[in-house]
Image (cartoon, rainbow, N blue to C red):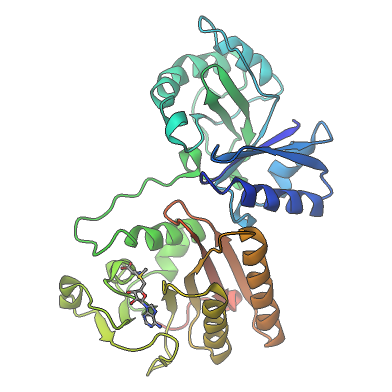
Length: 362
Ligand SMILES: C[S@@+](CC[C@H](N)C(=O)[O-])C[C@H]1O[C@@H](n2cnc3c(N)ncnc32)[C@H](O)[C@@H]1O
Protein backbone atom coordinates (compact mmCIF):
# COMPACT_ATOMS: atom_id res chain seq x y z
CA UNK A 1 0.00 0.00 0.00
CA UNK A 2 1.12 3.52 -0.73
CA UNK A 3 -0.35 5.65 2.07
CA UNK A 4 0.46 5.72 5.74
CA UNK A 5 -2.47 7.12 7.75
CA UNK A 6 -1.38 8.75 11.03
CA UNK A 7 -3.81 9.80 13.79
CA UNK A 8 -2.78 12.84 15.87
CA UNK A 9 -4.33 15.52 18.07
CA UNK A 10 -6.19 18.20 16.15
CA UNK A 11 -3.88 21.21 15.67
CA UNK A 12 -0.70 19.08 15.76
CA UNK A 13 -0.75 17.94 12.12
CA UNK A 14 2.36 19.95 11.22
CA UNK A 15 4.33 18.32 14.01
CA UNK A 16 3.12 14.85 13.09
CA UNK A 17 3.96 15.61 9.44
CA UNK A 18 7.46 16.91 10.20
CA UNK A 19 8.15 13.81 12.26
CA UNK A 20 6.95 11.23 9.71
CA UNK A 21 8.81 13.03 6.92
CA UNK A 22 12.07 12.74 8.83
CA UNK A 23 11.55 9.23 10.18
CA UNK A 24 10.42 7.77 6.84
CA UNK A 25 13.45 9.35 5.14
CA UNK A 26 15.73 7.68 7.73
CA UNK A 27 14.24 4.35 6.61
CA UNK A 28 14.72 5.31 2.93
CA UNK A 29 10.99 5.33 2.30
CA UNK A 30 10.53 8.37 0.08
CA UNK A 31 7.24 10.20 -0.13
CA UNK A 32 5.39 13.38 0.72
CA UNK A 33 2.94 14.53 3.32
CA UNK A 34 -0.71 15.49 2.75
CA UNK A 35 -2.42 17.24 5.62
CA UNK A 36 -4.81 20.01 6.60
CA UNK A 37 -4.80 22.02 9.82
CA UNK A 38 -7.23 20.64 12.44
CA UNK A 39 -8.02 17.44 10.50
CA UNK A 40 -6.38 15.37 13.27
CA UNK A 41 -4.65 13.10 10.77
CA UNK A 42 -1.75 13.12 8.33
CA UNK A 43 -1.23 11.06 5.18
CA UNK A 44 2.30 10.13 4.20
CA UNK A 45 2.07 9.15 0.55
CA UNK A 46 5.01 6.96 -0.41
CA UNK A 47 6.60 6.95 -3.86
CA UNK A 48 6.86 3.15 -3.84
CA UNK A 49 3.72 0.96 -4.03
CA UNK A 50 4.72 -0.95 -0.89
CA UNK A 51 6.23 2.02 1.00
CA UNK A 52 3.51 2.11 3.63
CA UNK A 53 3.82 -1.65 4.20
CA UNK A 54 7.50 -1.11 5.01
CA UNK A 55 6.67 1.72 7.42
CA UNK A 56 3.82 -0.20 9.11
CA UNK A 57 6.37 -2.92 9.85
CA UNK A 58 9.66 -1.13 10.43
CA UNK A 59 8.79 2.22 11.93
CA UNK A 60 7.98 1.62 15.61
CA UNK A 61 4.80 3.44 16.64
CA UNK A 62 6.27 3.70 20.14
CA UNK A 63 9.14 5.80 18.72
CA UNK A 64 6.83 8.43 17.23
CA UNK A 65 5.99 11.41 19.43
CA UNK A 66 2.99 12.99 17.70
CA UNK A 67 1.30 9.87 16.25
CA UNK A 68 -1.32 8.06 18.33
CA UNK A 69 -1.95 5.30 15.83
CA UNK A 70 -1.02 4.52 12.24
CA UNK A 71 -1.97 2.12 9.48
CA UNK A 72 -0.97 1.36 5.90
CA UNK A 73 -3.83 2.46 3.66
CA UNK A 74 -5.03 2.16 0.08
CA UNK A 75 -6.07 5.20 -1.97
CA UNK A 76 -8.84 7.34 -0.47
CA UNK A 77 -12.21 5.75 -1.20
CA UNK A 78 -14.69 8.44 -2.21
CA UNK A 79 -18.40 8.50 -3.02
CA UNK A 80 -19.02 5.19 -1.29
CA UNK A 81 -22.58 4.43 -2.39
CA UNK A 82 -25.15 4.58 0.41
CA UNK A 83 -26.82 1.36 -0.71
CA UNK A 84 -23.57 -0.66 -0.68
CA UNK A 85 -20.53 0.80 1.03
CA UNK A 86 -19.26 -2.66 1.94
CA UNK A 87 -18.27 -3.94 -1.52
CA UNK A 88 -15.81 -1.16 -2.50
CA UNK A 89 -14.08 -1.47 0.88
CA UNK A 90 -13.85 -5.26 0.61
CA UNK A 91 -12.39 -4.84 -2.89
CA UNK A 92 -9.86 -2.24 -1.67
CA UNK A 93 -8.73 -4.69 1.00
CA UNK A 94 -8.54 -7.74 -1.27
CA UNK A 95 -4.80 -8.16 -0.68
CA UNK A 96 -5.41 -8.79 3.06
CA UNK A 97 -6.17 -12.17 4.54
CA UNK A 98 -6.88 -13.61 7.98
CA UNK A 99 -6.79 -10.34 9.89
CA UNK A 100 -7.79 -10.59 13.54
CA UNK A 101 -9.87 -7.47 14.19
CA UNK A 102 -11.82 -4.71 12.45
CA UNK A 103 -11.87 -1.09 13.65
CA UNK A 104 -14.11 1.43 11.91
CA UNK A 105 -12.79 4.77 13.13
CA UNK A 106 -12.77 8.52 12.54
CA UNK A 107 -10.14 11.19 13.20
CA UNK A 108 -10.45 12.81 16.64
CA UNK A 109 -12.39 15.96 15.63
CA UNK A 110 -15.88 17.08 16.58
CA UNK A 111 -17.06 16.97 12.96
CA UNK A 112 -15.70 13.47 12.36
CA UNK A 113 -17.12 12.25 15.65
CA UNK A 114 -20.60 12.92 14.25
CA UNK A 115 -19.89 9.86 12.12
CA UNK A 116 -19.22 7.63 15.15
CA UNK A 117 -22.76 6.29 15.45
CA UNK A 118 -22.70 5.41 11.75
CA UNK A 119 -19.27 3.75 12.18
CA UNK A 120 -20.56 1.57 15.02
CA UNK A 121 -23.57 0.42 12.98
CA UNK A 122 -21.56 -0.02 9.79
CA UNK A 123 -19.03 -2.27 11.54
CA UNK A 124 -21.56 -5.13 11.58
CA UNK A 125 -22.19 -5.52 7.81
CA UNK A 126 -18.56 -4.64 6.98
CA UNK A 127 -17.31 -7.33 9.35
CA UNK A 128 -19.56 -9.87 7.65
CA UNK A 129 -18.32 -8.80 4.20
CA UNK A 130 -14.66 -9.01 5.23
CA UNK A 131 -15.16 -12.43 6.83
CA UNK A 132 -16.78 -13.67 3.66
CA UNK A 133 -13.87 -12.41 1.52
CA UNK A 134 -11.33 -14.03 3.86
CA UNK A 135 -9.75 -10.68 4.84
CA UNK A 136 -10.98 -11.18 8.40
CA UNK A 137 -10.90 -14.35 10.50
CA UNK A 138 -14.15 -15.78 11.90
CA UNK A 139 -13.07 -15.08 15.49
CA UNK A 140 -11.05 -12.15 16.85
CA UNK A 141 -7.33 -12.84 17.16
CA UNK A 142 -5.03 -10.29 18.80
CA UNK A 143 -1.88 -11.65 17.09
CA UNK A 144 -3.09 -11.05 13.55
CA UNK A 145 -3.13 -7.70 11.68
CA UNK A 146 -5.89 -5.21 12.45
CA UNK A 147 -8.09 -3.84 9.66
CA UNK A 148 -8.70 -0.09 9.94
CA UNK A 149 -11.36 1.79 8.02
CA UNK A 150 -11.21 5.47 8.87
CA UNK A 151 -14.09 7.68 7.71
CA UNK A 152 -12.84 11.23 7.16
CA UNK A 153 -16.27 12.39 5.94
CA UNK A 154 -19.58 10.92 4.79
CA UNK A 155 -18.85 8.34 2.07
CA UNK A 156 -15.06 8.98 2.28
CA UNK A 157 -12.69 6.56 3.93
CA UNK A 158 -9.15 5.24 4.03
CA UNK A 159 -8.94 1.47 4.46
CA UNK A 160 -5.91 -0.57 5.41
CA UNK A 161 -4.16 -2.44 8.20
CA UNK A 162 -1.74 -2.21 11.09
CA UNK A 163 0.39 -5.01 12.53
CA UNK A 164 -0.74 -6.02 16.01
CA UNK A 165 2.82 -5.76 17.40
CA UNK A 166 3.19 -2.21 16.08
CA UNK A 167 -0.19 -0.70 16.80
CA UNK A 168 -2.04 0.97 19.65
CA UNK A 169 -4.41 -1.47 21.34
CA UNK A 170 -6.96 1.35 21.51
CA UNK A 171 -9.64 2.42 19.07
CA UNK A 172 -8.32 5.59 17.27
CA UNK A 173 -5.22 5.24 19.47
CA UNK A 174 -7.12 6.77 22.40
CA UNK A 175 -7.16 4.97 25.76
CA UNK A 176 -10.53 5.35 27.49
CA UNK A 177 -9.65 6.13 31.10
CA UNK A 178 -12.12 6.87 33.84
CA UNK A 179 -11.47 9.77 36.14
CA UNK A 180 -11.64 8.41 39.71
CA UNK A 181 -14.19 10.31 41.82
CA UNK A 182 -11.61 10.99 44.55
CA UNK A 183 -8.73 12.02 42.26
CA UNK A 184 -7.62 15.55 43.24
CA UNK A 185 -7.25 16.83 39.65
CA UNK A 186 -7.89 15.92 36.02
CA UNK A 187 -4.11 15.86 35.49
CA UNK A 188 -4.28 12.55 37.29
CA UNK A 189 -5.36 10.93 34.03
CA UNK A 190 -2.10 12.03 32.37
CA UNK A 191 0.06 9.89 34.63
CA UNK A 192 -2.43 7.03 34.50
CA UNK A 193 -2.27 7.13 30.70
CA UNK A 194 1.54 7.45 30.74
CA UNK A 195 1.95 4.27 32.81
CA UNK A 196 -0.38 2.46 30.39
CA UNK A 197 1.43 3.71 27.28
CA UNK A 198 5.04 3.29 28.43
CA UNK A 199 4.74 0.05 30.39
CA UNK A 200 2.97 -3.20 29.56
CA UNK A 201 0.53 -4.62 32.12
CA UNK A 202 3.20 -7.09 33.30
CA UNK A 203 5.80 -4.32 33.57
CA UNK A 204 3.39 -2.22 35.61
CA UNK A 205 2.96 -5.10 38.03
CA UNK A 206 6.68 -5.34 38.70
CA UNK A 207 7.74 -1.72 38.31
CA UNK A 208 4.70 0.29 39.51
CA UNK A 209 3.91 -1.43 42.74
CA UNK A 210 3.70 -1.12 46.49
CA UNK A 211 6.95 -0.90 48.38
CA UNK A 212 8.59 1.46 45.89
CA UNK A 213 9.44 5.07 46.75
CA UNK A 214 8.55 7.99 44.52
CA UNK A 215 9.16 11.73 44.28
CA UNK A 216 6.58 14.02 42.65
CA UNK A 217 8.01 17.44 41.68
CA UNK A 218 5.27 20.08 41.26
CA UNK A 219 2.76 17.78 42.95
CA UNK A 220 -0.17 20.01 43.98
CA UNK A 221 -3.03 19.39 44.31
CA UNK A 222 -1.95 15.77 43.97
CA UNK A 223 -3.34 14.18 40.82
CA UNK A 224 -0.06 12.44 39.97
CA UNK A 225 0.70 11.62 43.60
CA UNK A 226 -2.77 10.01 43.70
CA UNK A 227 -1.74 7.60 40.91
CA UNK A 228 1.45 6.66 42.77
CA UNK A 229 -0.42 6.20 46.07
CA UNK A 230 -3.08 4.12 44.31
CA UNK A 231 -0.30 1.79 43.19
CA UNK A 232 0.88 1.43 46.79
CA UNK A 233 3.97 3.66 46.67
CA UNK A 234 5.34 6.02 49.32
CA UNK A 235 5.54 9.52 47.83
CA UNK A 236 7.54 12.68 48.59
CA UNK A 237 5.36 15.46 47.14
CA UNK A 238 7.26 18.67 46.40
CA UNK A 239 5.30 21.90 45.91
CA UNK A 240 4.65 25.15 47.72
CA UNK A 241 0.93 24.79 47.14
CA UNK A 242 -1.64 22.81 49.17
CA UNK A 243 -2.01 19.04 48.79
CA UNK A 244 -5.39 17.32 48.77
CA UNK A 245 -6.19 16.53 52.45
CA UNK A 246 -7.65 13.09 51.68
CA UNK A 247 -4.46 12.09 49.93
CA UNK A 248 -2.44 13.19 52.97
CA UNK A 249 -4.68 11.03 55.21
CA UNK A 250 -3.46 7.89 53.43
CA UNK A 251 -0.18 8.20 55.35
CA UNK A 252 1.71 7.40 52.14
CA UNK A 253 2.57 11.01 51.30
CA UNK A 254 5.14 13.37 52.77
CA UNK A 255 4.62 16.95 51.61
CA UNK A 256 7.73 19.14 51.27
CA UNK A 257 6.98 22.82 50.70
CA UNK A 258 10.11 23.37 48.63
CA UNK A 259 11.43 24.42 45.24
CA UNK A 260 11.46 21.39 42.95
CA UNK A 261 14.64 22.67 41.30
CA UNK A 262 16.54 22.64 44.60
CA UNK A 263 15.01 19.66 46.38
CA UNK A 264 17.35 16.80 47.22
CA UNK A 265 15.73 13.57 48.42
CA UNK A 266 16.88 12.82 51.99
CA UNK A 267 17.12 9.09 51.19
CA UNK A 268 18.45 8.00 47.84
CA UNK A 269 16.16 5.02 47.39
CA UNK A 270 13.78 6.59 44.91
CA UNK A 271 12.44 4.33 42.18
CA UNK A 272 10.01 6.72 40.41
CA UNK A 273 10.63 10.40 39.79
CA UNK A 274 7.68 12.23 38.27
CA UNK A 275 7.60 15.91 37.36
CA UNK A 276 4.73 18.09 36.16
CA UNK A 277 6.15 21.53 36.93
CA UNK A 278 5.10 24.19 34.44
CA UNK A 279 8.53 25.42 33.39
CA UNK A 280 10.73 25.90 30.34
CA UNK A 281 11.22 22.44 28.82
CA UNK A 282 15.02 22.81 28.59
CA UNK A 283 15.12 23.62 32.31
CA UNK A 284 13.05 20.55 33.21
CA UNK A 285 15.28 18.39 30.98
CA UNK A 286 18.40 19.72 32.73
CA UNK A 287 16.86 18.86 36.10
CA UNK A 288 16.11 15.32 34.97
CA UNK A 289 19.68 14.97 33.68
CA UNK A 290 21.07 16.17 37.01
CA UNK A 291 18.94 13.67 38.95
CA UNK A 292 20.02 10.90 36.56
CA UNK A 293 23.72 11.78 36.89
CA UNK A 294 23.33 11.80 40.70
CA UNK A 295 21.70 8.38 40.48
CA UNK A 296 18.66 9.55 42.47
CA UNK A 297 16.01 7.58 40.58
CA UNK A 298 15.53 4.54 38.40
CA UNK A 299 12.58 5.55 36.22
CA UNK A 300 11.09 8.96 35.51
CA UNK A 301 8.00 10.31 33.84
CA UNK A 302 8.01 14.04 33.14
CA UNK A 303 6.28 16.60 30.99
CA UNK A 304 7.91 18.97 28.55
CA UNK A 305 5.77 22.00 27.73
CA UNK A 306 5.65 22.58 23.99
CA UNK A 307 6.68 25.84 22.33
CA UNK A 308 4.22 27.56 19.99
CA UNK A 309 6.26 26.86 16.84
CA UNK A 310 8.56 24.12 15.48
CA UNK A 311 7.37 21.84 18.24
CA UNK A 312 8.79 18.64 16.75
CA UNK A 313 12.18 20.24 16.14
CA UNK A 314 12.37 21.75 19.62
CA UNK A 315 11.37 18.55 21.40
CA UNK A 316 13.74 16.43 19.31
CA UNK A 317 16.62 18.78 20.09
CA UNK A 318 15.94 18.60 23.83
CA UNK A 319 15.70 14.80 23.75
CA UNK A 320 18.86 14.48 21.65
CA UNK A 321 20.77 16.70 24.07
CA UNK A 322 19.51 14.64 26.99
CA UNK A 323 20.55 11.40 25.27
CA UNK A 324 24.03 12.82 24.59
CA UNK A 325 24.49 13.95 28.19
CA UNK A 326 23.36 10.61 29.62
CA UNK A 327 25.65 8.73 27.25
CA UNK A 328 28.61 10.98 28.11
CA UNK A 329 27.97 10.11 31.75
CA UNK A 330 27.97 6.39 30.91
CA UNK A 331 24.32 6.02 31.83
CA UNK A 332 22.55 3.29 29.92
CA UNK A 333 18.92 4.22 29.35
CA UNK A 334 15.71 3.79 27.41
CA UNK A 335 13.71 6.88 26.54
CA UNK A 336 10.31 7.27 24.98
CA UNK A 337 8.31 10.43 24.36
CA UNK A 338 4.64 10.70 23.45
CA UNK A 339 2.03 13.38 22.92
CA UNK A 340 -0.54 11.59 25.04
CA UNK A 341 -4.29 11.90 24.60
CA UNK A 342 -4.52 13.73 27.95
CA UNK A 343 -1.62 16.04 27.08
CA UNK A 344 -2.40 19.38 25.53
CA UNK A 345 0.52 21.73 24.92
CA UNK A 346 3.04 19.29 26.32
CA UNK A 347 4.57 15.90 25.68
CA UNK A 348 5.32 13.20 28.21
CA UNK A 349 8.70 11.50 28.48
CA UNK A 350 9.56 8.15 30.06
CA UNK A 351 13.18 7.67 31.04
CA UNK A 352 14.40 4.33 32.36
CA UNK A 353 17.97 4.20 33.64
CA UNK A 354 20.04 1.03 33.40
CA UNK A 355 17.02 -0.93 32.18
CA UNK A 356 18.92 -4.23 32.22
CA UNK A 357 19.36 -4.01 36.00
CA UNK A 358 15.67 -4.45 36.88
CA UNK A 359 13.87 -3.23 40.02
CA UNK A 360 16.32 -2.66 42.83
CA UNK A 361 14.98 0.06 45.11
CA UNK A 362 12.30 -1.94 46.92
C1 LIG B 1 0.32 21.46 36.47
S1 LIG B 1 0.48 21.65 38.16
C2 LIG B 1 0.73 20.02 38.74
C3 LIG B 1 -0.51 19.22 38.80
C4 LIG B 1 -0.30 17.88 39.46
N1 LIG B 1 0.59 17.01 38.67
C5 LIG B 1 -1.61 17.17 39.64
O1 LIG B 1 -1.82 16.16 38.97
O2 LIG B 1 -2.40 17.60 40.49
C6 LIG B 1 2.05 22.34 38.34
C7 LIG B 1 2.51 22.50 39.77
O3 LIG B 1 3.89 22.76 39.74
C8 LIG B 1 4.18 23.59 40.85
N2 LIG B 1 5.48 24.23 40.62
C9 LIG B 1 5.83 25.08 39.62
N3 LIG B 1 7.13 25.44 39.79
C10 LIG B 1 7.58 24.78 40.87
C11 LIG B 1 8.83 24.72 41.54
N4 LIG B 1 9.88 25.41 41.11
N5 LIG B 1 8.94 23.92 42.63
C12 LIG B 1 7.89 23.20 43.07
N6 LIG B 1 6.68 23.22 42.49
C13 LIG B 1 6.54 24.01 41.40
C14 LIG B 1 3.02 24.55 40.92
O4 LIG B 1 2.90 25.07 42.23
C15 LIG B 1 1.85 23.66 40.51
O5 LIG B 1 1.19 23.15 41.66
